Amino acid sequence: MATDKAYKLVSFQEGVSNTQAKSMIDRGLVYVGNKKVMIARGELDEKTIFIVQKVQKIKPIFENSDLIVVDKPAFVNSDEIERQYKGAQLLHRLDRETSGVLMLVKNEEFREKAIEEFKKDRVYKEYIAWVEGIISEPIDIDKPIVTQKKNNKAYSNVSGKGKPARTEVFPDIVSAKKTKIKCIIHNGRTHQIRTHLRYIDHPIVGDEQYGGRRAKRVMLHAHKVRLLGMEFIAPEPREFVNFE
Image (cartoon, rainbow, N blue to C red; front, side):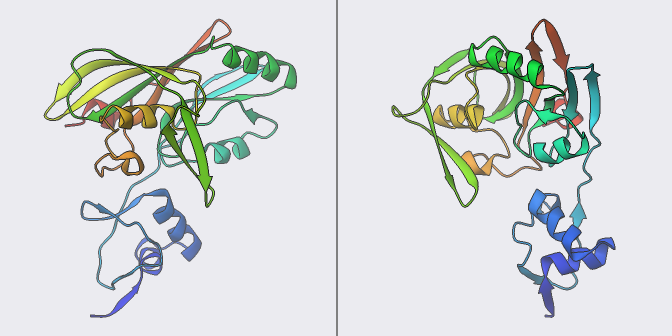
């Protein structure tokens, strides 16, 4: 059986450069059947047929002289969006596979005012997620979180040595052995929702880093944000509505 590196095979099949093919694999967009290709340099049969997910376009939600708000698609890094909007700076970040409301600021005066609102926990942040198992009652998870970075990758844990973090969880729909939930977060630590849901043994579907089963993406979406009297909503992605 003749083999070659996965990224070279993707490059040939899709008619893209080796660099673009590597990027597609690193983003988690390339599948063989239902299995995600995890290692760009892994050897695969030359006859392998790949399925490549398309990245959705960035959708504008709001813009004024202080602020740009977009609906970030999954598989796009927050920093990439910042680079697309020259002169604007990220006010916060979403993980690569998390979609939804992302805010960028245009001036320092507004940035300082907005950061003060975040510090005082006066920003309303509502997420939608599909999680493993059945949640039938609201849960208030008030557990400190500590974050470590290794090889440029963050990993968080519940720990008494961590910083305060609170996540309110409200069940919405139960389907088979999973639950669609609404989360309201306070404090906003790195990977807070993912860490807290793993802590209560209901990891997010697709979040393999924190114990979820493999899926097309991490099923977490930043749905609604309220900041300084303004409200921004990113509609639920189609894959969340039709998820079975």
